[in-house]
Length: 171
Image (tube, rainbow, N blue to C red; front, top):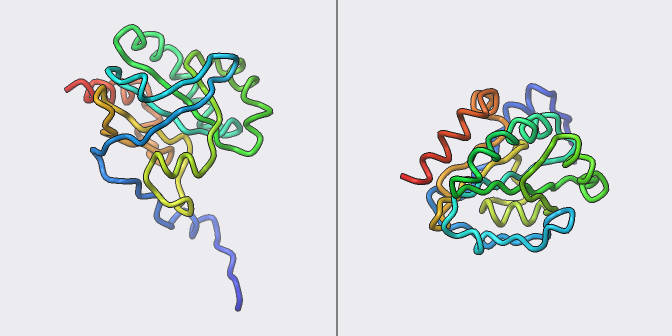
């Protein structure tokens, strides 16, 4: 049996993750918020539009997204909208505090495993995906939209993109 290494171009050509179909009921999601924020549960947030971001604390795109999400969150949190962040990288437990402080994260964040992500996104743990990974859950608890870091247009224009995605959750 032999193995071949794939070049960067060949890796980029591989298909990315195919999550479950949308719309679909959101799977249960619960975690301990960093910094003593207590238990966070998607079920307790029913009635609010929720943006769930799975990310890596050492991902430059995730760092930029978190920074740019701060003002959006402050504006939308008064309009029945909640953002949640779940860090999945191996070093997240050690550096989540510095991530929150350095990138001015105001919304609840916690830790998740790849298995947690795969179950919530309804995809195989073996599927390839790009950070950050956003899932938009409407006030009735239904995943209506997903965006992953490979969608450059979405993340380059993150502020109006998030605003539009959240607005659709209230339609």
